[in-house]
Length: 212
Ligand SMILES: Nc1ncnc2c1ncn2[C@@H]1O[C@H](COP(=O)(O)OP(=O)(O)O)[C@@H](O)[C@H]1O
Ligand SMILES: [Mg+2]
Image 1 (cartoon, rainbow, N blue to C red):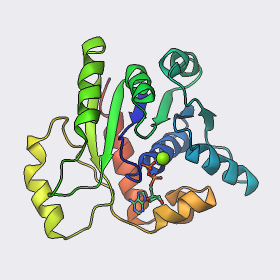
Image 2 (image 1 turned 60 degrees about the vertical axis):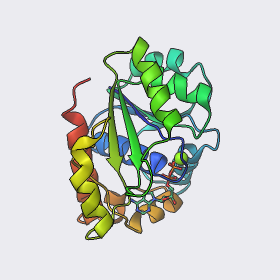
Image 3 (image 1 turned 90 degrees about the horizontal axis):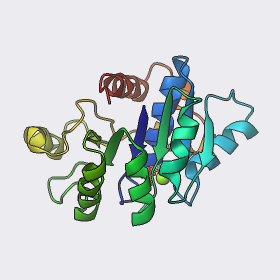
């Protein structure tokens, strides 16, 4: 399966969640490759930090921030059980290419009742991709959720109305995720028995249940 984490907004958790999805699959013995489609190369940085710390290699990270990505991804997919694409910010040609490569698009969003979750442009690019890929699946993924806030409750009530639909699994706002970016680790390697680790496991299990 080729899963792309896409949202033109930066800072929503594309890189964090791409690495954790890949890491969770790898921990279960699956062969995974991450495509870093962001010219900033944060996923590559993470994997280099990991190598510097002599941590075991869980999956390869390939830098492919170019709009031929959809032609190169199938080649990489031949040698892997899953490909995870860490998407680019705001570059329409790269977004189009990632959308053409993917079987499943995950749109991480920080839930807020005050503004739309995804930009009109993101949704129109998704609509455009579905002309060529009618079976392309898409889901919103609520990230950085506050546990008992009014915002979280209001959001939960409006969840069924969304298109694309919203994943049942959500990821909380947890400082441990910021530590993973710096240290080249996954939350499960920092604290195996933490809420963050459990959320990532549930998220990954739910993705596994969405057949492309
Ligand atoms: N659930 C979370 N809880 C706390 N911090 C988070 C969470 N998800 C992401 N972050 C932090 O937010 C920042 C942006 O996340 P990142 O994954 O780089 O977003 P993007 O790739 O969409 O730009 C990073 O510092 C990351 O550690
Ligand atoms: Mg990123």
